[in-house]
Length: 220
Length: 238
Image (cartoon, rainbow over all chains, first blue to last red):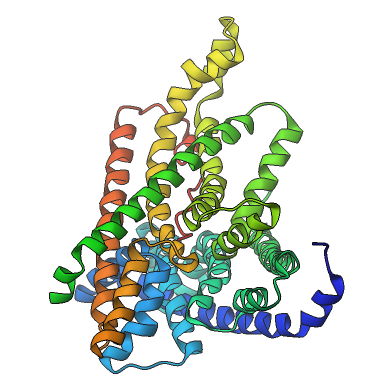
């Protein structure tokens, strides 16, 4: 049972295909979940009558149920309602719905730092609501909310490995698949652990860089 | 409904398995968290670095990969783990990586003068931990730990991937069985019911955690400002 580099070399293209799918699913879901987050948080902060309550329920529900069960409900359960999605889009939908709930909380946390006083001050200075949002609220909310939004995005990337359970051929699926055929367990796990670690660490590095840059005006 | 009644013993078995898995994991994760978490507050730089590496490693590798890893790799070292044991190990390691941060944050939230006064009174290090800072840190630690427990309950569903017959797996089996034997697919209802059950369990726990937090906070008004929120608990890893 020694480490077989040649084997890993031979499987490299398959792993890269898996990685590419992982990246695609994650990137798409991250963008969509942030969209969900912004819309949901807006509904809550603006206290839209029914929608606001629905958003609260949605967030609570997602946070208190396992992602795996959500995934199976979407992939195997929804066709019962006549909604049949491909593997890829089931994955995107699942991750978006899951991460969206967290992004709503993140964005809301950011928006809540923009107090009422600021809004009144901005309006009394004659700023239009749009300019208030663009020049005052958004920059502040982004600074506060961005770190946790990036954390959620990183979690999403890691959780894309759940999608192997429904058979989407992303990175983890490829590895497990190869292991069940060739039994080169150590090589495969070493490879995907390193790939995931690299992905996550790179993302966290850029996240902290960004945070640092955004906080520049507040550093002494 | 008929499906539920016919499979009730099976479902209850699954629930018991989920509960067992969650409790076993909680047990081990708590021990490791408190052990390594307190060690990381001691004044040994290298110790802190080691714990940090442990935490980062197991938080950054996806939990799914982690569990498969234990399940597939342990036999290679002559360790025949049952699926249950493999999942317990995988989840405990992951849970403790999150727990360590909570414990460490809890100890850091205790005002430093508590430690200094105790030391000035001649208490030994272990006495200070056990009688002075420990009980105070516990207040900050307990609520996020309940949150961790909810995450663990959710994460036990991953047992299904390696063949532990816990609650989620039971739902899966019922779906497959009904599809094969009776020719209709109850996936929608079954998975909806599974989701709802998890929701009831976990939101009860979350609610308990919030109650605990309010309860423990109310009679402690004199916290340092930066001590109000101890380590940001890992509320978002399922």
